[in-house]
Each structure stands twice: as structure tokens, then as C-alpha cells.
Image (tube, rainbow, N blue to C red):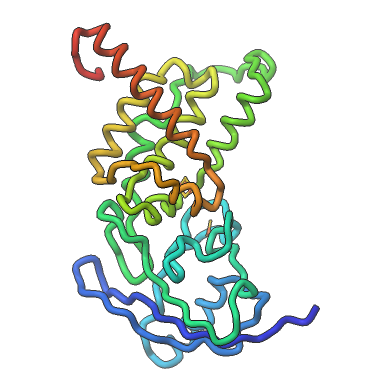
Length: 262
Ligand code: SF4
Ligand code: FES
């Protein structure tokens, strides 16, 4: 089927640097093929800006295949745009109508400082993972794959949690800028597997503490995070994180009479 061409008006947040004042600027995107991806459309707009000697619009991206978690911004108030379960790099222009006006804004959250235009610093999510999102394994030859038996349902649940790509859309969609969906997905995928059991308590305590230290907000269970998540990470992960955290807190208190996390 032949592609269709559409024209769009873009109102884009432009901000030269983290400490500069930002503002919306209007650009026309003309003759956009409906077969293009959203980022290809922005590439086209940027080529025209460069030809005119203007600064191109800065946005994060890497794989453009929906797997790396680098891309993401708000399109008319929706994280990653209007299409469910889709990253903005996988969003196609056929999702839009000729003549539409689209407002593009970066993720807005205190823990995600704006770097430039649509690009924010999401290293707070990396620091949450660094605080406990791993297992400790002795080095040596690899264990036979079938020597640790894992029920299929558990393996599937762990896999679903592990599909979180760390894009930050859940934070951007939450009115409190909470990172509970992200953190709980990272805690869950290890807590569900035998390899993750050994460090489960320490992991839950440290990752929740780091999430709070980074300045993310409180969870009020509106579900906006899961609804906007391109990987459909379920709210049951948050319930599991709360259980893991409670269990770890009680056990720590009983063991140490109120001592620290060690
Ligand atoms: S939970 Fe979903 S929205 Fe949040 S970081 Fe992971 S993939 Fe992105
Ligand atoms: S660029 Fe990798 S997920 Fe979009």
C-alpha cells in the first residue's frame, strides 16, 4: 500500500542547558510519510533546522527497536505518545492525522533533570539498580542449565518483570513522579528466581532506600505508570516490592534489634 503524506505542527520544548530557561517553539513538519517512525520525522525536521543554521532538537535514542530504553518524551501529554505498549522510536506517523498539532515535552520529574530540549538525565534509575539490582555468583564453570529447577509460571513472571527497559515513562506519567513501577520490576525479576533469593532482603531494603534518596515521589496507586509503560509492566510488581520490603524490614529488626542494613 502506498504511503500517505501528512503535515504537522510541532510545539517543541527548547532548553539550551540544565540551568537555562526553556520555552516552546513551533515548527512545521511537512510531507511526512505515514510509514516513518516518530524519530525519523524528527530527524527530517532537524535536517531542515541544520540547513537553516539553527540548533537541531536534542532527543535521546539508541536502538530505535524498542529494547534499549533510551528514547522517550511526552507527546500531547502522553509518555511515548498515544499508542499503547509502544516506545516513541517504534511509534509510526500513521498514528497521527494530517493537520494535527503535537506538543513535545521532556519527562518532567525532579529526579530527571533536563539536559537539553527533550533529553533528561535518568542516571537516578541506574543508581537504584547499582544499589542492589544484581546477584552475587561465585566464579567458576557455568552450572548446567537444568540443575536449578524453576517452575514455568515463576520463570514467565520473572521474565515479564525483566522486560522493563528503564525508559522512565512510568515516572513521567505519575503525578508524584514515583519510580515504584521501575524499582519493583527490578526487585521482582530477581526475587522470583532462586538465584535472587540469597540477597532478597538486602536488595529490597537498599533499592527502596536509594529510590527515596534520589527524590522520587510516593506511590498513590493510580496506575498511570503501568498504563503508560511500553512494556506493560504490571502493578503486581509494586505489591510484590512492598511485601519484600516489609518482610526484610521485620527480619532485620528481629535479627539486629533495630540495627542497620550492613
Ligand atoms: S516500568 Fe515500564 S515505563 Fe517504567 S522504566 Fe520500566 S519499561 Fe519504562
Ligand atoms: S531508542 Fe531504544 S527503546 Fe527507543
